[in-house]
Image 1 (tube, one colour):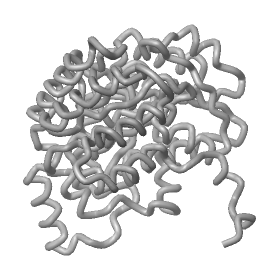
Image 2 (cartoon, helix red, strand yellow):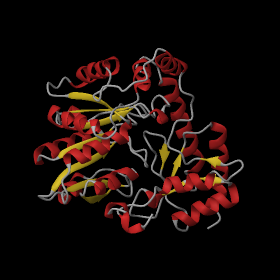
Image 3 (cartoon, helix red, strand yellow):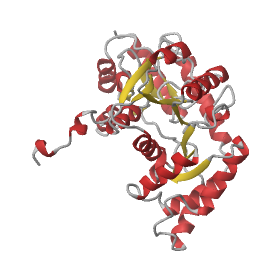
Image 4 (cartoon, helix red, strand yellow):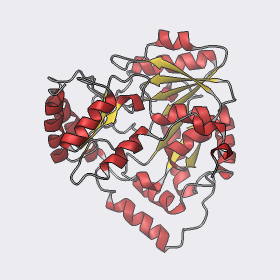
Length: 371
């Protein structure tokens, strides 16, 4: 196909740098894979069984665009108990990423500005670009904390949205209550949409999770089942917020994703009764294992959640460091410039077995001394 057929928006972003590392890793015989952002534990049997039962009982047709009552009503009940806001509606999305895309297409006009905290999940600026918006980056280095003065200084008359992610990918940082309240109140005062990506909310190791929706009832929350219940391939998420916004997102879903897969929704309803705390406790141990194994050789901020560590590069550029790790140790990590305008850090995922993490620590210790 001729390149002149392609729309201009395809030039606004590149293929995911994470996928490029995955492609390199596919050629390795016995990789130390600390790159992938999906749980390493098996999907709980109760959830697998519920999906199989849904398929076998012929629940394979289109689902309602807003979600099947078996799941949607259960989630709505949880949200009502958690927040108690009168105008807070919920629907089921085709993954959290699907929810983010719908939110940006429904809310952003071309030329409007979106504040994104750097480092950031790769999808935020790419999808904002698809919507025609301009991304305004607010730096959070060196400790990845949100400075409200920096946020306030970045706001202009064109600012339409702030994207907030805690626990965060790629840093693993969990915002403090003061940070959460501050960003929620600032968005409310300036009448700016606060989009809160809460996909890692169950993965908090040192303090309880706090949603900005607690302090700002107009917060638009996107969330999902992929990480918590180890079903990333099932594309099951949900969003909740002001009814006027949610209803427009449902309308756009009808013309795009159509619906989340119906069997996955029946399984999702069962998943809400599964206790995943043992898995969360296991990730806390893996976090501690990795931090203890690297902190004397790497400049790092201890993550409070998710399953990522974002240390400073001990030498070289991100791609030089990652390439050396692949060539010498079959080690897969992600260069930090995939998630940032800086090229000073790299991302480690500890969603891996303890044995693989131990191998990774050994390789990373050797790698640190090679610069």
